[in-house]
Length: 276
Image 1 (cartoon, rainbow, N blue to C red):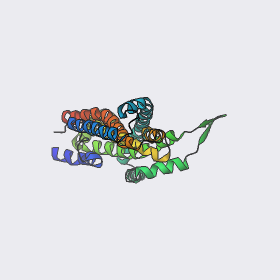
Image 2: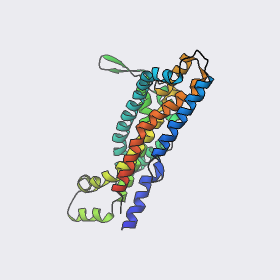
Image 3: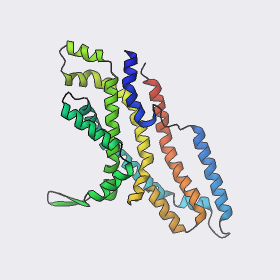
Image 4: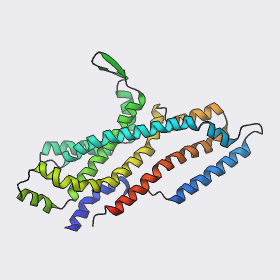
């Protein structure tokens, strides 16, 4: 029985990271900080004698960069929320007893799960309208909102696989015991199966969120003014080629500082919720 549970759980872990959390360790942060310091030192040596300090220039633009990074975080939160809600329903559809519903949910999951994220972003940016009518009002649909929806599509498909894998990892004896007690399938899912699935889904769900967060700079390609776009604008405004490497390493450091606690929490939950 334990072997069957582990076999059913393998699809839950494999689509994202092969069963492991993001491999971030403190040494990676130290190495990144060292590279940032070294690049700033090299850039300072290449700068003109009268040019402002590299460090002071980076600090000057930090508030603007933080605003762009906040948009990255907001898009990741919204995309994760939308993808989780629809992915949960899609995952339950994959285990439905109705063959058409099961086949349709499986088709949608595999389509969006195997589609390049950037292609989905382009489709959403080009096909979604610039404004929508709600009653008598016309509401503008900004680019970041359309990009968020584009990111939510692959998240939805991956969450659907997490749900399906978690449900199938529950030993079949629990379904049979619930059936012998006259539980309906819906009651069995709600009261017995899904509560056990939550702890199995939480670590890979958190890992998926970290992956989504580091994927949000893709939206810069479709014109969203997030941190990556603003970094390019800062470099254009300064007109100093020596700032190129330090500024992008600085941005990378921001993402590391945000994602590292998530990676550590994911690893801790995987150890705590390990399926024996």
